[in-house]
Image (cartoon, rainbow, N blue to C red; front, side, top):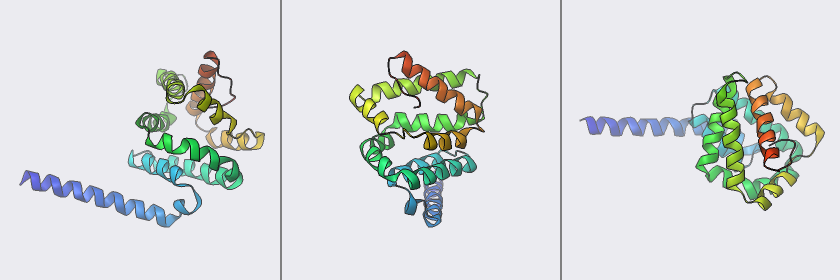
Length: 177
């Protein structure tokens, strides 16, 4: 009986996730965002990240993608699938979103930044890392919009500063991760 109950509970959980996924698809994420970004959003939802925070992330992507699609598509094509399939990257995403409520001086913020820099350096060879930055949004307006999206989360601002600093300490010059 316990095995049957566990099996039914697992099926119910999968069906609830499928129902939630269908609800979000009806909401239109897949209509306005590329699959890789929809996949990242799905991953955050499945990791039980606060829905308001995930919606904020989605909205930032909708705005950015609408304005800079031609620049983002090549970057997403080259790097997006790799990130979505990398368990290390997905774990960092979840940690980043959970860190939103931490104080900027919390030691977890420094550890997250260090781990992110380590992932970036190890996941991509130097040429891929350079191409990733070259295809980024080197646009002051876009960067201001993105920075404003996260300004109300001081821990995120701090982790971004620490990532840039960590990259610079490794001789990788880039104004933002």
